[in-house]
Image 1 (cartoon, rainbow, N blue to C red):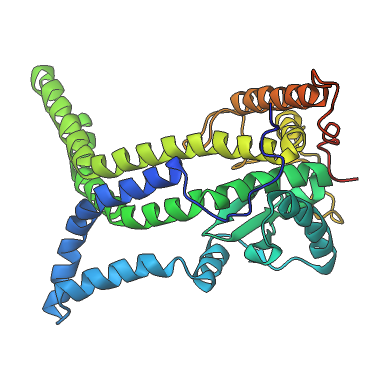
Image 2 (image 1 turned 135 degrees about the vertical axis):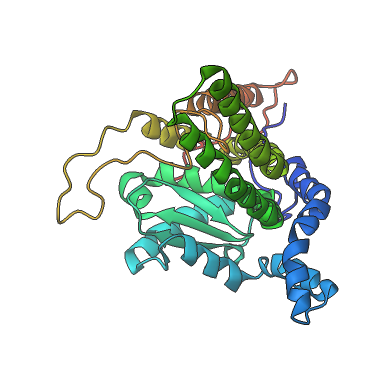
Length: 343
């Protein structure tokens, strides 16, 4: 039996089923998003902007996200992103080079930036940007850091982040409509509060409060329903993507390292008192990459670790089988060396 994923194929980024599902959601919800934009564009039309030009600018703004400067600008807008310091760059280059060598991916293909946050975390942005927190650099060893970076590389090579970014961009009009529904529901909620403070016949008061409550729920649901449905599908795809890139890291040879990092997340202690000299005062719970409780975009940490452990065990069994002499007395050239690539 051949060993799985001993090296990457070097073919570069290709969308998998999860990325294609995100793009399918884009196609399905684009007409609804365009309809949500119509009232705003009609107002702009009064100022002389044609509808076709307004929709064209909206589509162009989504396409601009594929540009590297735009991705970096958005990353800086959302997080305190910066270039690594010389010491950070030297360490990241060493770890990242090992990951890219195993994946057979050119070093110039991706960029790594540092986020000044104490949380132990790493995440992808756009199609070629990986952000690592100072907490991850301070708390994770080189092996664990390699496992985390291999996981993030899997997201990029399967185009999960790029496809999800376009989906979020298209769904922004639906979120704006949901906010409109929230605004329309507030007067109903205000009337219910005002009515609840008045004293009159319970036979009238109870049905009136119930009617106002249901009306508010209906208004909010009517405006927020499409966006909630789209994001529910998107989050389900994101949870599936986590399992896929975990498997990619294992097949690339970093399963033990990734599992070690996730175990650190699971077992990290509460932070001690902050020290004025310390860059990162102590262990921090990861908010994005690994969490004990299920999140909208991430499955339970225990389930991820169980799947990684099973896949690592399967890979070890395959190596052992490949190392056994064949019936003709010949070997396959020796078993694969340890999957721990870093000294």
